[in-house]
Length: 279
View (tube, rainbow, N blue to C red):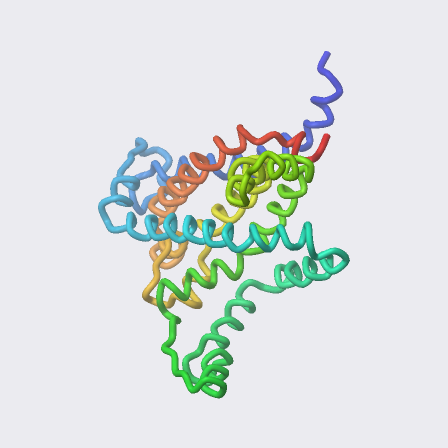
């Protein structure tokens, strides 16, 4: 007789199988079909994966990985001091600031990116107009470029790094920091040897969320990057849509899933969720 835990978990297992594992299996099987065909009777082939590497799709994939890595590192550098201030020094204002940071998440990503695009316009934009009026400075546009797309990704994904990091910082006992200072540790040593190791679970979750979301990001490149930026998600959309080459699109999708799993699963295996949830 099975334990009650299995029966309680059965609905979740069924849902994950139907909504997660089965679609991935279908995509993986489609990726092994001959290019531009939907014939299940033909023998499987890796031609779509070979084409993905030899026909120029490696560059969009590389830029997607680089952009996700860069965004993760920048948001980490910005979120750490913000999280420390909110947790230790903001007091009663911490919840107000947190709400103000979280509110844009409930607004459409495209709307926020178009707003940022208007803000960055070289002529008539808020930033350029303010600098011209106050300091007499004229700036060029970073729109339709990689810096513009990266700025958009940092802007959109900052909350996904900040809030897990606040949770991680809350795991740091104050007496550990005070003990390290009493033993003569300077600020840098306290950060590297006490705070970062203890806050690592929250930092890891924030980094994973940011990286995975950025790896699948498309709107930032389309709105702020323009034709100068091509990411792997745009290539996948083009294969499934305009080209109607589903096997090639499936092969690119499987490659992205494999890269994501290779990064995410080892980190999740090391996380102590009981400690993170203080159980």
